[in-house]
Structures are given as C-alpha cells and as structure tokens.
Length: 258
Image 1 (spheres, rainbow, N blue to C red):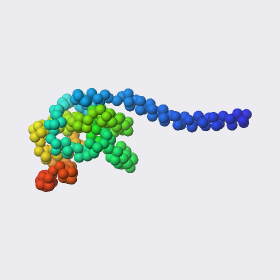
Image 2: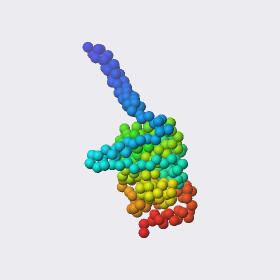
Image 3: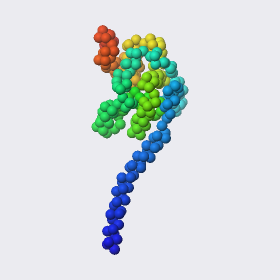
Image 4: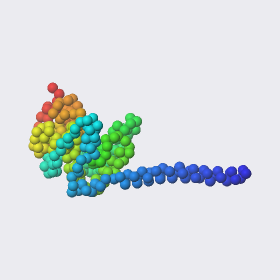
C-alpha cells in the first residue's frame, strides 16, 4: 500500500508541474491567436483614406446617448499641402523619434512602464505617432493592458505596410482638435478661418499645443496651461533649429502671461 502511494506521488507532482508550465503557454498562444484574428486590414490605407475612425464613432455614439447630434468636421489635406513647420512642430511635440523607430519608441515605453509601476495604475501611455494613429483608427479610448497590446500590434502592421509619410499624413488628417473637429485642415478653418497652408507659426504652435487635451483646450484662448505648452513647444523648435532666435523671442513674448 505504501509502495503504491509513494509511486504515485512523483507522477502526480510531475503532472502538476507540467500543467503549471503548460497553462500560461497555452493561454498566451490563445490570446495571441485572438489578437491576430481581430487585426484590421491596414494595407488598404496605402491608396485609400480611412472613413469614420473608431474615435469618431465613439464620439457620435456618446452624443447620441445624450440625445445630441454630432457632426464631424474634417477636410482631407494632401501631405504636400501641410506646412513643413506644422509637420516639424507636431513631430517634436508628440514623437520626436518618429522617423527613426518602427512604431514603438522603446525608450519612451520603458519610461512609461516604470512610471505606471511606480504609480500603481495605467496613467502614462508612452504612445508614438503610429500608436496614436492605431488607437484613433481602430480602438477605444479605454486605458487597459489589452488595448495597449492591440495598439502595439496594429502600430507594427502600419509600419510594415505604409511609408512613414503616409502614416504621418493620415495622422494629421484624423487627429482630434476639438468637439467634432478632426484633422489639421478642419482645425485651421474652424479656429483661424484660413486654410492650413496659410497658418502663421504662432497658430501652428497653438494648434499643436492642444493635441493632448483637444476637448478641454481652445487654441485661441490663453489659458495658463496652453501658454505653458506653447512656450515648451517654442523652446523645442529653437533647440531643433526649426525657428530663428528672433522669431523665438517674438513667440515667447506672445506666449507669456501678462
């Protein structure tokens, strides 16, 4: 009796150990399979502009639940018609390494993970321009690990199938700038009543400044936060030598609280 019992113990322990090893592997494979099967077809964006984005649909749905009508204001602008200063300003503000990474900025990601672990919550995204585009086109605004993983995978797909300039063009045309305002073309017309190609350097900086808070900030109203961010962006423009010292001095005065 004792021999039988003793003979079974190693066998049972072996299966328990194997199960503990196999279960997380199988779970990981299953999750990865689900992620791959639910991936959007991004290759179509090579030649076709996106229609309503996931973010637009989310805003429309939220307005409908409150019994309100939501109208999307968007004007698609060719990449060549977007001012070079705007391309540079948005890039150094949102993702300075955009043209040097493959969709994910590992240095920023490391800082993001470190900060989230320190705070014990998912508070910092560390998103590149490509990741932001993935979220705007296909995902919700929910802050969760699952959504972040999907965001990473879609970002990699975008980088695989589209050129950097195409990714950036789509981003600049779908990014949110206010209630119902999407893209730099619509934002320029709505806030400054002119085509995006005619924006001044001050107007470009003001529009860029509200990207992190499009529903809480108006680029034409001098809130403390807006002016602080405009000064921060202006300093980066000088640092990268995208503006001259004389223009910097003028803009800093414009963005200084009286």
